[in-house]
Amino acid sequence: MKYKVGDRVTVVSSEMQHLIGQSGVITDVDEEYIFPYEVKFDDDSLNGEMMVTLFAEDDISPEHRVVMMMPTIEMGTPILDEQSFINIKFQEGTVK
Image 1: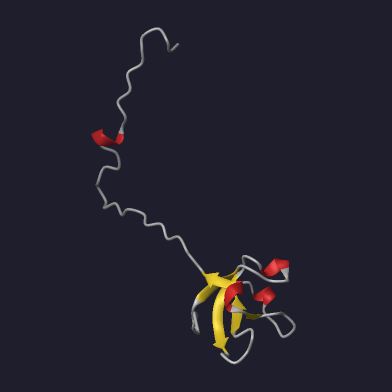
Image 2: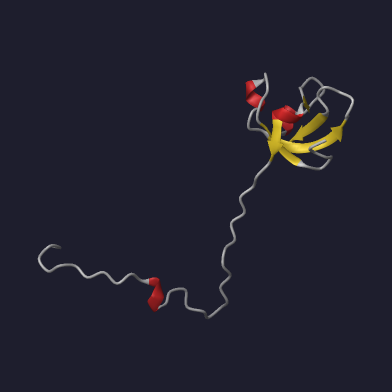
């Protein structure tokens, strides 16, 4: 099996179009079933007894999250220095 319980996935294929692009966590894997992966969606309105939460391996994809790291600045450290600026010289007479 490609995925295991606890893996975060995104739905990439489903007959229910509103589920495509939705993310969640795999809560159960039944290797004997045609749709072995049960997914609990992040959006609670998509979870419930009457909702389709079972998917085949080709219907889901690993969720790829982008994490942006922000630089930390200590108190008293200048934010800008002489290397923070681009030195541009304008030709005289072109800028009014």
